Length: 388
Ligand SMILES: *Cc1c(COP(=O)(O)O)cnc(C)c1O
Image (cartoon, rainbow, N blue to C red; front, side, top):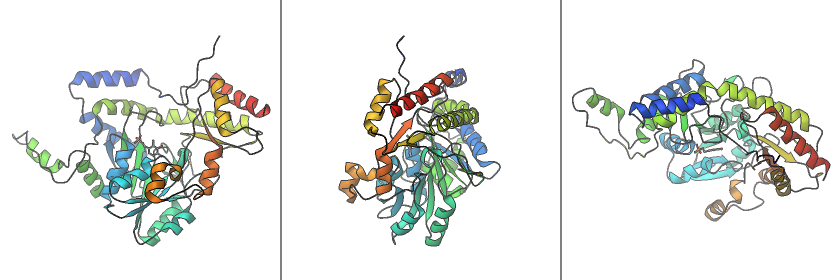
């Protein structure tokens, strides 16, 4: 029998999500409303462990990052320090505010932003540091926050991979920085199809984002009118946008959130299995986290050693021939045309990221994989390594 192709990622949608969506559709209220609000409250509770944080639901993490930076006052000619080894949204949203993303290199083997590189990139225009918890592994927030404090900078966490991630006993998002942004994109650890959540302990920032995510309409004014007879009235108080999360999407998100710990446990089990089976091969494997920390295992990125006589691209091709989907995270931003032509970056600028990129393969790691799937992936890698 022909083996079915194993995709690189798959959402885990069960009858609970489907029922919740159907209920929402039948309710007659499909845009932002009571379900999004409940999702925000439940998400804040899940993340905060009793600490007071505000969660604001948005239509993507990308727009969440934009609104977070806008709320922090980042704008024209400001600089935001961003690791080059990330998805474009981490850097590009600054451009939309008239600010400049300043790329820096990462550390190996953790593949997270280098505190030393941050420090050397700081100028009088620097306003914020964008931290990405690559693959779900917490970045060195203590060192980063120390630098931020010394130079009066904001820290924004792109936590698109970091649900649930723990750093020094603190859940990412539980007031671990000025603003933290999560993604519910289709491949992330929980999904709404598309969606995101901005989390902050600062009420002013949360209030600003709530206004800016929906046309700059002030809730206070809106509520004042809607509680009276004048239900049609509203007031525009700022140049807002359209980044609200629909109740249809939030219905999925609420059910996914209930499964978040179970999903995590399954991914951790897969990660442990991969590490055990692949440990004697010429591969650089991601480490287990130190105590007090938790890696969310959104991605499992192996790196091919130069001992292997197979290129990264050929390795992925071989895996594909064996019906296994792999991916690469990430093509460093400074190697993309836009970042080169707009900011003058070039090949050679960030050697640690380039070396990581050239050797990196992301393996499938998701809850819909069966034990047999996981075993087959490991066996296939062993076979490729032993035959090259
Ligand atoms: C997926 C991702 C984003 C964007 O998330 P969206 O919800 O799709 O906008 C941002 N940063 C990183 C590191 C990501 O992986």
